[in-house]
View 1 (tube, protein in one colour):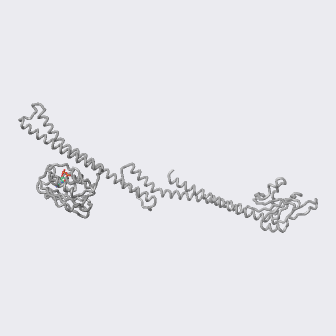
View 2 (view 1 turned 30 degrees about the horizontal axis):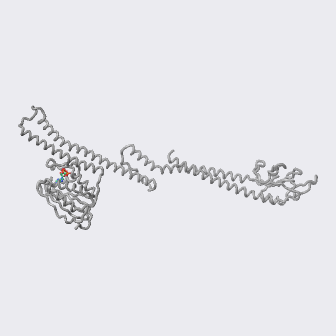
View 3 (view 1 turned 90 degrees about the vertical axis):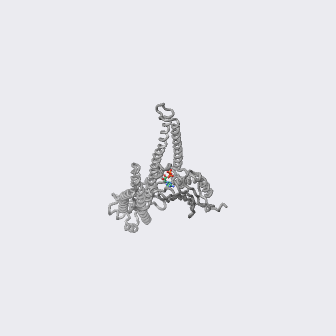
Length: 488
Ligand code: ADP
């Protein structure tokens, strides 16, 4: 059973019970009020009747008829009075009874005791409420007859019947109207929920996460449910997009990595084949060269193998760093004094293979400046920029200096080397990207700057590049600085 039907059923059920109780209460109250009032009036009249007892002329027995004047008063009030004398077994009726030929049934002597009090009876098909009791001799207590006072209850019964019909019809009509309206309202309020279910179904069946539920109603429970659902869809959509992008990047990375690894492997295999042919192959396969030349060729082949192995080691190390970065791995960070760190980097940089001059600026402004970071990773990152500077500067100068600006410390590595074209700059931090002029001219994996960027990101920093083709490049790494009292 759907919610709207259940809601309607509950609502109608509760309404029905309420109406039923209400109707019963109204009917009961009116019934009680009508009959109670009538009863007390009958009782009053009964008490007012003054019985007149006389001696029967024929047999000398006691005969009983009420005082005429008291009965007349009662007749005006529409009371029907009957007396019955056991002695002569005769009944006396008030005029209004006699006129209509009405007669109450008289209880027998035996079960008279049970018949005392109020009774609802029918006389000639007409409903009456009567009060009846023995008439006894005051001094002896002997029962000699009955006094019965009644009132016609047809009018009250009709009124009560009409009330009953009105209540039944009213209850039914209210119930039908309320159920129909209730069903309509339940359907109307369930409609947006149906929309949510449809949208969820659509998503579950297909892959379209761009579905949104349109709703321009008030911001009630349903409005907020739809809002939450739409937000959830947006988040899921962007999450899937990120996942998709990450997956695509991963695929690109794997395919680039295998491509990059294939080149050194091919070189190694070629050289190994050559060595194999020279030194272990059949005599006829050997190049027809003298021993000295063969040794020289072999030495070159071994040198190539060694270079390529080094290149592969570098490549694999870099890839490993990036793979770790991709898994969201970070490193422990502690406040690090920048000045000693940079002094160490500058010292070690002078031993790097280079064709350009190396110079360092004044670091005194860094006294008391710290960064929250990891010493090894910060050094690795700076060496990537410095090594690149040397690699891409055939002659000229590579320099390092620092600037402090708005709570940030900028470490600037500038060179006067080959520089880059403007359209290449946005790509240099991508994995395996190497600018055209660098390919072939210098050795590299195209991963260095990706690793540097990751390290900068984890330190909450940023990097700025200024470059001009043929004139050189400047990289500024900005890191959030912590200022402490100077060390000396
Ligand atoms: P690579 O191993 O090729 O140096 P990187 O990721 O370190 O890889 O650099 C990506 C590319 O950015 C380089 O191939 C080069 O074209 C360009 N590049 C990086 N640093 C410099 C620089 N100092 N001068 C000119 N080009 C640079």
